[in-house]
Image (cartoon, rainbow over all chains, first blue to last red; front, top):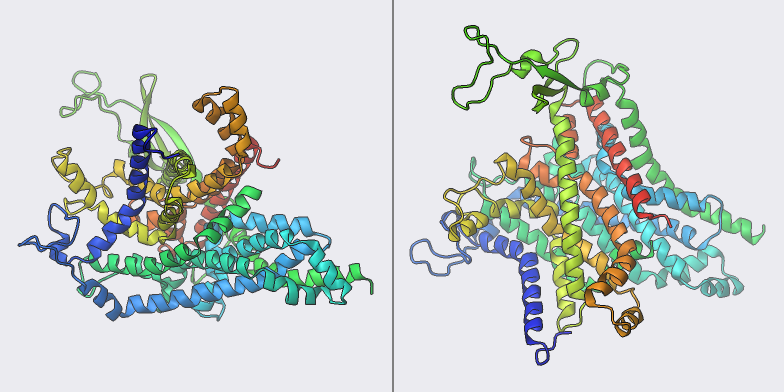
Length: 288
Length: 349
């Protein structure tokens, strides 16, 4: 397509378009990194500078204090810890419960299968906010504690998702594998556990990663359920409610430093698994 | 015991945990919300909740239109003219809107056939929240589809570094919504320390910095800009996957027949892309209708989406009955959208 010798103008336009798209996608993130390396006075320099500059000499001068401060502040570190616990446990629970159901839905014959599939698909489209009040009532009434309550409530979006994706994966596995195992005298459960499950490992990783990102991102439940228990706040809530060390000012530098810190690991993970993620995201959509 | 029976039994056993979980985290709360929406339940209230029928729904949705009579100048016998604006003066809406049995507050005023009317609602904030959410959803999903299609078409061409480009597309998607809200909040900052004001200022387009997030006409467009940035790549990826399923032979054949590039796009690409676009549209629309994070973080209580109204009603006002009714209404609105889409796009077949 891009052939400079034959079509120089067209190729140049194409590259320009690519450049515009890349800048558009990455610039806000660059701006956050840039601003997170500025001191309060650098942040409010007008006009804003494209790199952290000294207010007087205008030399390049990054400031690491924002990053140091957020790791010294309890709220951010606690938020990170809570988020890691909540997101990983919600993912693991969804994966284990979802994979069992997905095996049944994808490979076994039983009555009510189609109905169950549609119920689960409907759940993935279900507006979470609808049941906010209902879940809030349950969680505040049960003697569970806020964090287990959050983990449990996150299953409402992680479970249908993992079940749906894993079901389509099990369906694609050749039936012969199961049949030959059965001929060898394996029970259906042994077939599932010893033969099919290892085959699904790549799908499990992708599915788990996507579910983890969803849970890591979740905000409305976390904000609502931690309203009465600030110690259980997850990272999105901590960042939304960030109050700096000095009261009465909005600590934009620290907020953006926190934003960068929580985004970088996810971006790295996503880039490592990019091919599988794209497959996972589009599998449901394209196959219908 | 025969094999089929054993298989069925195993299936039920494997399905049971998932079904129980869904029952507890989805069906039970849904039933609770539906039931509570007919009561005047208050969170942690001292007295028992009473059944109040459709009162919550009436309170949220009731609207009325009243005529605003002109204010007559006693001396001249003609309608008063405002000295500052030069416009004719009408009665103040608050004096016209009903107060008994329920108080209505002004939503907006408008003129029709020379008569001035006021549109009042019992809960203007919720009606506005519905309007804000629909505005946000329609514009942002439209822009995301167009931009997503454009990006997908560009990335679908063969060029060096295509893999890198696809990786770049995942970056905005991987940013937590709350984080992207705060990143953009800073870019939208109301002084020239903000990126957009700096840019506009540098090109000499503005005399004074624009407070994007507090000036009402810019509030929703700002939300749309952030949402479009974050979710266009997702849209583009879905469309890209659809593009890659179109067999190349079709293009070859069309080229042999002498069809122009534009013609090939409209007769081959677009029709074959319809299913992929349809699914992406459905997902994005249903998602946009429940937008919460952006509105809550950036606009708090100055402007609501349906979901953020629900949240504040529940957490700040502890009004469980009303909040539940809000949830049910959101559910119904999203359901209506889903059905319209299914009908329009023929997703079922």
